[in-house]
Length: 241
Image (cartoon, rainbow, N blue to C red; front, side, top):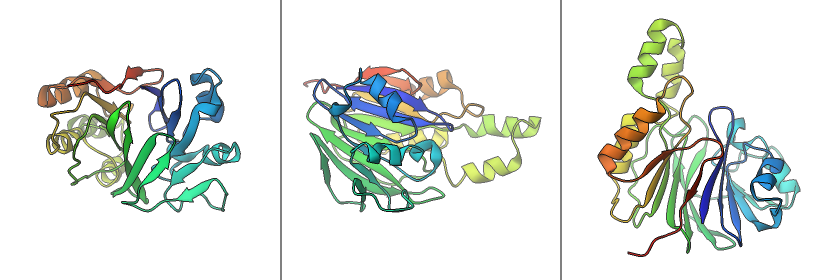
């Protein structure tokens, strides 16, 4: 099973978990054509799509996916209308899309938003957590972690002082996105014994530092760490212990 990053930024977000038999789309911020190309035009591999929240960089193409017959799991406000392939989901309830078992949980953003626990025999248990400024949950038996590390407060403060960012940007980020130190705290609150990979998502273009973030997360977790960017592909196949 591989994770392929189609996009991971404030402009668009889209990820694929896929093997030779099936695929799960995570976020609908990229077009169906982009997904199809990434799967070598084998769209029939897609068993469904999960969406965290209604912001366009995560949900812009959700209706396009649903119109193509792809089952979409998302919070209730993602669609303005009703669609037969659309399933508003409940936190804590289990869902199954092909071999993917999915449990959504609520996170704290500026609109209703879910994180996901995704289980598959090929990957083990995957945590997908983005667009939240806080997460106090502890998740058992994790094997892969895909987590937001949007900005560093010291970089943001320098950018505000220099005029690159407006002060209001900091006020919004404090209640919507995960700061580097928060990402570290969430990770260190988990049992990382069986975690094989950590992927950092949604890095800010101006208020992050990819190399620094990867190095600092690696230093505290002692795990392989990657920064998500378009065309990154990582083997997430669960390794025997």
